[in-house]
Length: 211
Length: 353
Ligand code: SF4
Ligand code: SF4
Image (cartoon, rainbow over all chains, first blue to last red; front, side, top):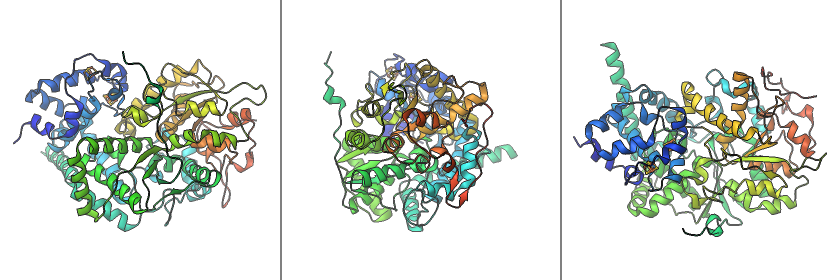
């Protein structure tokens, strides 16, 4: 089995994300995730830079890599041209692909996200659409959102949307041929294999819980 | 130190002939904004904006939730470009800021790693029998509205001025992070001098306020918003912005990203309900508009066809200041007759007499 470091190096976002970090901490200073969580992109860059397998494994099993909010403010600011946000993408990919993500509670949430947003892409052609934003799980959307969903097509069509209708325009229903093309792309480029790795993790969790 | 050259912060934007791709978030929360954009460009300005019903999500939200491999999103983007190529267009017009960042990133990777472009061409061909050309211009809809700000202002019956006092309205902007923080050269003003929204507001006569947390992220956080238990991340980061802009008593928050537009609207409601605090001092919240919504209002479009009743922070205080006439009774009426009205929040004021 290839080392974690060599697997990381296969991901272009790893090499684009980290060349030589000088530990200045500017990324951490601008990072909204560092402002909110116990999270420090500078520290992650340092750790990864050591290239030590044990440390990498700990990182891939841990909570910290899941804190980044992917705003990429760090890309605009790093004086060395590093992109901690890209580095995080490569770490998260390997964490899921290797199954190590199931060791952290934040990592395990990927299973839910995959079944929700991932599946929505292939079922509807949208990452997000109105009926996905259920008021029960989205109290922050306020009473106006409950009202908007109750009006549904009536309201959306008044605003020029097609609202799940056949044909042209916003929120149109995607034709089966379109969804087939999307699925074929996911199949050809490893998107579906990646999801299988996430589901294998889910399966392992289930087995662990049963035993 | 290298001197700053203003032209480095400018961007070439073609005048016409665009292939348009929509935003999942904008279609969901602000359907009237995209409809208004197309109406302005096609009908007010007579431009050629083409849309192909076969285009899909760019998968950008899933990509930044780390659910989609790079090779997959690259090929989905290539499929969108193949629709553009097939229709005979080379200028891409993108509604979403997340998508805009994704297109910039893919084009950059293809430029620096031509072997990835070849792999993508092969993957697209194998999966869909499609081919594609690269766009010669990649334009966010806020770029185009900014580029056309003078012709729009010339046709506009309104100004961003308090009609009764002639005071210029105070505008704070929030430019979506992925607009120019990833690829500063891809946006007006780069990451340092955001001008795509401020230039628009000033053209309409507004006064821009450069508040301290102007460049801070709205807090979308992708997975953090999508997971209910992580949403505290999102509201906390928006709160940093509201706290920072409060002292300047803004009349309007102007955005170019559909996600930011929604968060800066909804989190004001949430914070009001959580803490009893609103950031306008009157309990009504600070109205939030995106660039298309603002342009449409300035051009005299009907606020309710524009979908402004889908905002939680109400727009009437701003409409009244500008002097935009609206029919209060039409606000909640539907194609099928008058509908019920939304429930009133506990703290945030939504009805005004
Ligand atoms: S800003 Fe760049 S050089 Fe400084 S700590 Fe972060 S990654 Fe390292
Ligand atoms: S991309 Fe991640 S690490 Fe970089 S500033 Fe944003 S939240 Fe922090």
